Image 1: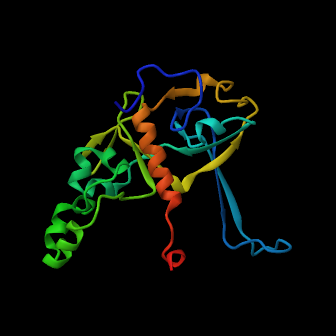
Image 2: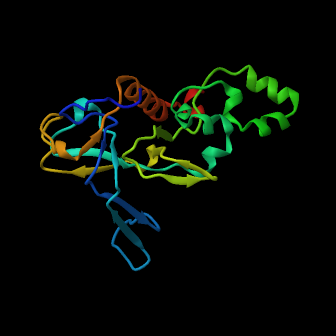
Image 3: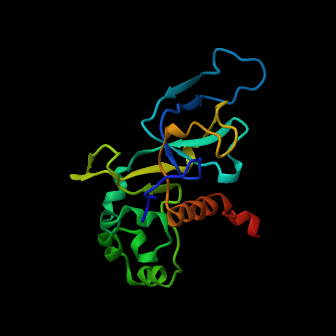
Amino acid sequence: MFYESKISNAFRLGDVIKGFISVQPTIKNPIIGAMTEKDNYKIDINLPQFSVILSPCCSIGDSKITLTPLVRLKNTIFKNKFFIEDPTRINREIEPQYTLPPEEFEKLPQPEKDKILQSEKGYTLLEWFIYEQHDLFPQYELRGIDTKYYMIDFRNIYKINCSQIKTPEKVPIESKVLELSIQARANLREKLSYYYGRVPEEDLL
């Protein structure tokens, strides 16, 4: 089960909510010192149909919350038949041979295949987390397949100030539309932790 059949009266990590804007600033160069005409920037403000809460449950409050838009799947996901069968497999650690489309894996030289097969389970497409289909989500077509799967991108997280968000229980609850099951929320927390917790090679030396 990906979603709770009955949602709680509080905001939680992974909740799908509506009515919150997204803000995405873009700059050409870092603005250092006095601003000049060369310091081009723009701010895109949109109202996504749905957003996802990425604040930890216990950190929701103080008129602040972190969100990311819920968006359609990227076209590349359905290049891999393993993910066509169940896109939410991206959310969990998988066997290494499934990280490549089957036809690409078969074309590899045997030594490379053996090296991959000897690897441990792991995450792929690290910055993405897939949301199961739901009747609330608009249907769309991806690579000739009708789907209602949606996703979030950990690189598109932003903060919103909202005076109605005082504690996890004192929030504009009417904006909440879906709540993840305990297991789905655990999967989100674990992949999000892995995404931010990776140690770069230069720090291992």
